[in-house]
Length: 408
Image 1: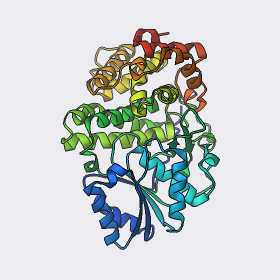
Image 2 (image 1 turned 90 degrees about the vertical axis):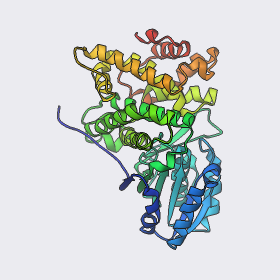
Image 3 (image 1 turned 30 degrees about the vertical axis):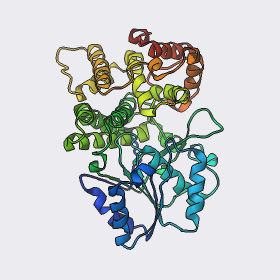
Image 4 (image 1 turned 45 degrees about the vertical axis):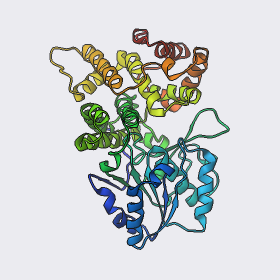
């Protein structure tokens, strides 16, 4: 097998303690008028006030939209864009969690190309370059600061929808782990588990071959040599520090590890894509109204068990990255130990263990399985194939907490 890889990333990634202080310098490269998108909570902090003051002191005029809502309701983006048109921004700065960054991507898209968000659902629908976007995450989870996708809630659809295009990738990802220091333990856990799930699914994704047209036809192309590099880095960092960051939010080194882990996971899955855990979470999350990161993490041990028949070697590598002892263990034994370690870690940080505990009704399992199987961009990325029967059994096992039932 010859080496094959693709990677789509921001023009610049800046990471480290205090990086928020260089935002005015970075922004000045793109112009003098910035639309800043954030949520009401972060807009009320002294840190945000200092960021805005620093931009203004650098002669950058700022229009703040501080009404970003969780899960990005579709029509809220249009309201922001209408308000910003008269302002004429040279750039958009998204500051906050994943929803704030996705909102900023969508605002950038509509300011640049017009129309409605519905015009761009799916892959490669964005016709060209957009206004420069500077992504400044304040949580460590989604990796949206480096990915080519924005996920929104459409009131006309049951499931969330995505817009996927290389043109959505931020020009600059500016990541300062100090911005995560006040993130509460519950959110730290859910966001970090989301990142770890991203990395695991990217590393175990289907390897789709070496067709040179693959990256031109698909945004997410399965695992490659480069995405594997970032996925294993993410797993190593999150494995050693996520539990610490949840138990002691003042641990600066753990916070940096978790934020770098989320960033690296985004670099991996932004090209490789995710798989079955995410496919099940979309319908399960729609029914239970639970956090995305919580749902995918709940599913992860069950999906890993289902996939272990065909991905034991990859799971053994994941185990090694987590620090498990591989000596005298077969690949299958190492894979089993890896799954158990993921279960232990997630339990330790408070991740819900079953779909039943998430609130998924037993009479909705068939519908959940059918909807998950229909998300082709994710299912085709899974290393082991599904049919309706196997998907139904996976969902049942995850509902009941029966890991052994995933060995089918």
